Length: 126
Image 1 (cartoon, helix red, strand yellow):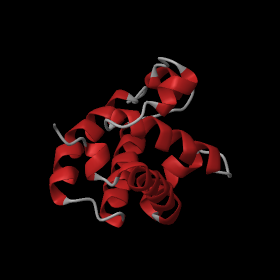
Image 2 (cartoon, helix red, strand yellow):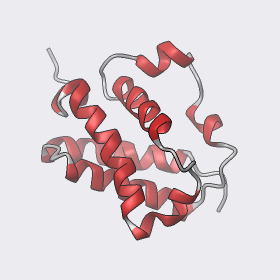
Image 3 (tube, helix red, strand yellow):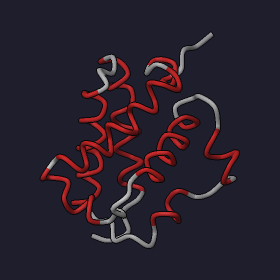
């Protein structure tokens, strides 16, 4: 049986920690100020949704999809002006989150390109 990134990150607890660490990095890193400005003051709901999304995306329970159906993530983000700066800030925060949760190096390497592709797919301006 093949081990999924979800399992390699520690299952539900590990993926929840990753979502928390992502938003903690976004708040704490001055380089992510533009990305932070796109979010509400209260991040609790979006932290939960990121966890739910990543759970299924990483090979675990499909929580997000069971709750919201086959929602196109790009269309959910369409109302936000996302350019190269915001894409790069998102990726910076995700890489920092992976570091903060002590993701195994092979998992970080495995996910870096898919995370970069995901971030690029959200772009809707130059």
